[in-house]
Length: 269
Ligand code: ZN
Image 1 (cartoon, rainbow, N blue to C red):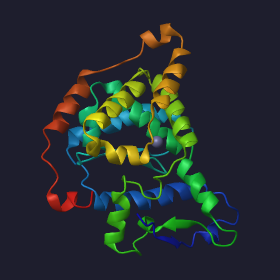
Image 2: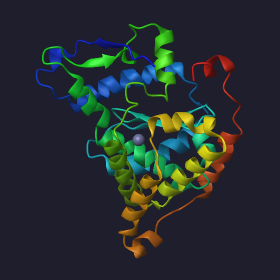
Image 3: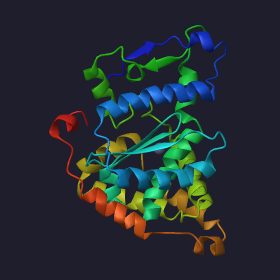
């Protein structure tokens, strides 16, 4: 997949190389608007409410910058999740279908929140920045490129610009995921469990999880690393953490009952 990059005149406000939180939020808001116009976002009020309540409960404690977090369910059967700088997190219904318990979905959210809090995408953009060019952004952030290109870019795992996290970034986001869920009173063992569910599914039917694996290089060592981190947590603390809830199961049922997105919108998936 070709990524079309253009320079955007952020230069006026970025004398140095650092992208401020304000710029990150501005950029993320524009990008999220593009994504929301392109992807079949679920509007069902109960689904929207639950994913935001759960997401906020994790993000508010993870994020010292007090971002205005927003969580979205994408009406797509493929397993995927991604985050946009500034605090926008997307989860496909295909992933929600695979999660058997609340802590497994919470672990995915904790991981994506970790990418935002650690500013992995923002750091990549800062590195992309030339000395005098200002910030170079992918065309998906602007309306300059044609829609086809935008759709194709988003298509690639949902986050063309932000798709390629290093293994280090992924490992860090996993660590954050463990910390973030524990802080929110949720059992972190959902994280390695979810990884295992996805690995098992890769064996059985690789195509349904291919977009996830394209952006989340997931090997057994990530399961072991999170398990090792969790093993260092006081068992008394672990015992007190929440694994599942009735409201998660109702949410899951509600998502399962949603009609599939119309083919026209799913074509851009
Ligand atoms: Zn990740």
